Length: 200
Length: 427
Image 1: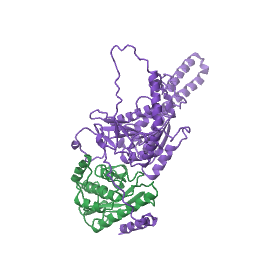
Image 2: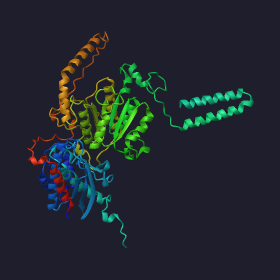
Image 3: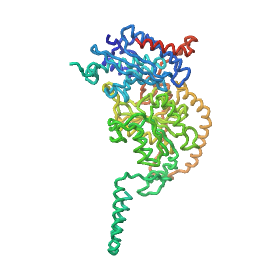
């Protein structure tokens, strides 16, 4: 098990945020690993949401192709860090897991999100329900805060970015920035520490 | 209170009656006294709720909840205030702005309010107005209905506890806006105005989608995440810019961005800024519904500098929203007739006002016409009025690649892809 390569430090994330606020959402400021990974995830072409019938089915295929490519890439780079699959046949709700390695310990969380009716004009709101209320960089219901580091990139690249891009550029840097803080501050515990040992 | 006073007077009457009567009948008087005392206790303990009123009275008495509102009519500000009872307003997002807007409209005697929110009241909301600590844990919509029906039982309240951004929530949202049972003769949808009081871009885009599809006029409101600025915006599908015509505008805080500390929290809030924005929003709503004054197309509020930028935005002919483009086409078709009718009305109004209001103008007072509002093409971002900036970038130019082969059309392909991902997920 290795530490995910896509660890954007908190400092570089904040610099990135300020770049974005000046109105130039570029990939400057992101670490080279994330950049090279991103360029290898297939871009999407169909601009369609869940209310668009046949066009949505086409979009869904592109989403799957991008997710498959990204998952394969992660596995071959020894950087596997999430599982995601559609929870309904329409492909409007997705559930899975994501994990992050900190100090050689693996922390795993449930991951879920809905595809909004205005997709892809608006990004999916990624939720980590188990962390709800544990960090301020989160909205109600465990929705992670993507406002500064991700939303401008999504807006600029609509409709070419999909679920895979949201995980790579939205969730991965969030985990890299937040999980170490949550662990170090004692807000989350490793599963082996959480249950008191019954052996004596 | 009025009932308590009357019971007190009744007790006094009984007391004086008792003194004037012979001792033989005193025991039944005592019984009567006990009854009245018991009733007084009941009145004191029960929450006072006034009965529903059939009409809005203009009578100036302490007990008339509408006397000060109907006075607007007598003063010539509003031509027909009572029409407010015919109107339905939908409020999306019952948070710091939406709940206060709902209370204002309830106190104004609006006909019907539709309230949408999926959230619950929390103690963390107590820095804002309206909700009370004992309502923590209730859904915002239920807590709002509880308070609002006590304030004004004449208002028809409908609460929808749902998330409008999900496919299912959106369907309920659309059908509730279309329901016309409150006023079947109304043209168009079942509501007169939609107020967006949500706190995120995604939900605003959903309200925009619904209103573009229903050809429904709506107003947008927002408070910045740093709690020091806000805005309201009027959106008439096809006639003004829709919310997707250009990246959203934000009122710049006017302080150096680099000095703002953003680490740690995703949103701050103040009851003051939210109260001001709710006030601006409902004032614009009242002007729009009751047809008085100037309805602002966009009004910003920068609280650090007390600066209020205004502007007007034309729709973007290249808008990415298909329903917006449909509404734009329809508007261009009816525009010549509308412009002619408007010019005729203005000419008639001018004729009426022709006679000088004040024959002598000793102080040379003149009214300066300040109607020159900036009208902007939303597609050109470099011409924004001072103090306004874009929240998000415009999507890059992008030409659709040719579809990758005919095999893309089959549904089996989708199932095949799903299986491939599952196989990868399995190891």
